[in-house]
Structure formats: C-alpha cells, structure tokens
Amino acid sequence: MKKIFRLIFIYIYIGCSSFSLSIFAEQTSKANIKEKLNSDRVINSLDMLQVHVFGEPEFSGPNNSGLDFRVSSSGEISLYLLGAVKVAGKTPSEAERHIRALLMKGYIRDPHVLVQVKTYRVTNVTIMGQVGKPGLVALPAEQKIDIITGIAQAGGFGQLAKTSKIELTRDGITNVYDLSKLKKETDPKKKVWLESGDLIWVRESAF
Image (cartoon, rainbow, N blue to C red):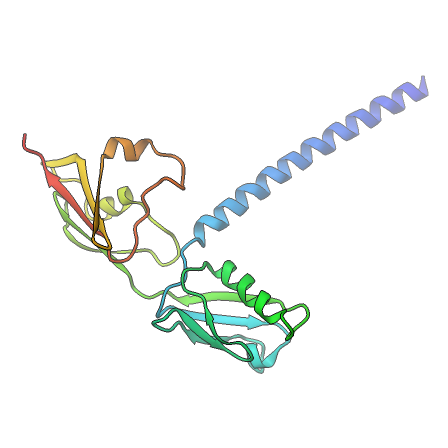
C-alpha cells in the first residue's frame, strides 16, 4: 500500500512540475517576443551606438562604460583592431553577434559584446491625400510601425478616403493596398512595415 501511495505522489509531483515548467516556458516565450518587438528596428547610418566589450578597455573605455560611435553614411563604425565594421541593416543583437564573431577570429577568445543604440536618427514618412493631418510622420525610435498605424498618426482617414486604394511608394516603386485586407493580416512577416522615406497617398473616393 505504501508503494502505491508513493507512486501516486511521484505522478502528482511530476505532473505539477511539468505544469509549472510549461507556464514558465510560456511566460519566457512571451517575454522574448515582447523584447524582440521592442528592439526590432535595425541600425541605420547616423545612429549613435554605444559598444561594450567587457574587460577590454580599448573597446569599452577605462571605466568599462562603453564607447560611443556614430554610424557613418556607409553604415559602418570603426572599432579597435577590427577597423570598419558594417552594422547598418542589423538589429543591435545582430550587431553584437557580428562583432563577437569578428573578435573571435584571432583577437579575443570569448568576448562579451553589448551594442546599444543611444539615439536613432530622426526618420520620417510622408502621408498625403485623404487623411486628417497630411505631411511628415516621425517613425518611433525603437519599434517598427505598419501602414495602418502610420495613417492613424496622420489623423486617420478623411471622410472622402478611398480605403481600398492606399498607395505606398518606396524607392520609386508604388504598391496599392486595401484597408480591409491590411486589417485582416496577422502575420508580422506579411504586414506592411513603414521605412524612412516612404510616401503614402490615400486617394479620394469618387462617391
């Protein structure tokens, strides 16, 4: 009988432990997703970065407080030993991994790298046509916004807006979007994220 009770206790313990682990895993996953969403904006030229390579004064300064670097117009920063390093187009975490990989090639055995963006350059999109406040809309510093959010920040659609014909011009190429389809899209990879220099034109309805 004691063996039966012992087995029952073990099963209950394992079940509770598994349940706790699943809750922890779910919370960790949500935290990771939230962190990614808040830091997914890539580094651009003219951004100001702070770079730490812990324990290496030449990289992080005498007080290990980090060194500041302005990203050049070509998208590079100049680091000790490494010279020009391309960081534009990468997120801070991607830049960390890139610099770490370069340092491990004969320089530092196990470098601990931290890259932070002190200031993002001011970037804008232009939203014109049937919106409440046509003109420039500033993109947030650390978080991407989609075309719907951008229009909302421009005062939303006007009464005569043709929401089935939203034009977005980027690098000389114009695509047309329908608001009803944009609202149904839940896949982040398929959403229309805004980039600096985009021109959005909300056409006027004929009726």
